[in-house]
Image (cartoon, rainbow, N blue to C red):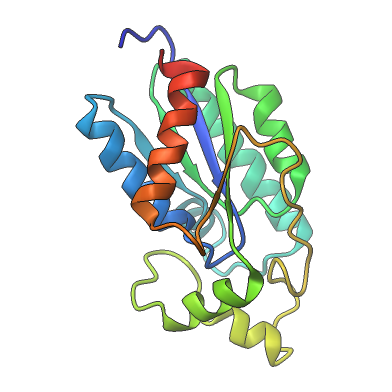
Length: 185
């Protein structure tokens, strides 16, 4: 599949919805099809920019603006990006849509109860914060998307997958199919 410019797929959803697992599965699917891509994790970027994050609105604005800027530059340089980021406010994702020419939004839908269960059972956190839902439920944190601050579901994502009903590989396959329609064919 010839490619003239890179692209960006933003995988969004609640914390614990399975975004990172789906992103890794999507990366494997792409590689099997001979397509190179890079996962850009908001948790990794946030750790570099704000080593002691407070998850305030101002901090989120800075981090998501930076993530969009990095993704745009990479895409302009023919690097394919899988953006693994909650992006709790629609305006963050819409900003990416305006800035990145070849952009697609993939919504990993999960009921809040399922996301909470997953997050509490999680053994590998990579760069993600630990125990966020416990802290929110115990009123130690008021900044958790879906509990303390809103998570605004996408209005018109190119693809929606339900991670409470589908395995990560099935979610990745559905996202890949949408990618083929949008910019891989």
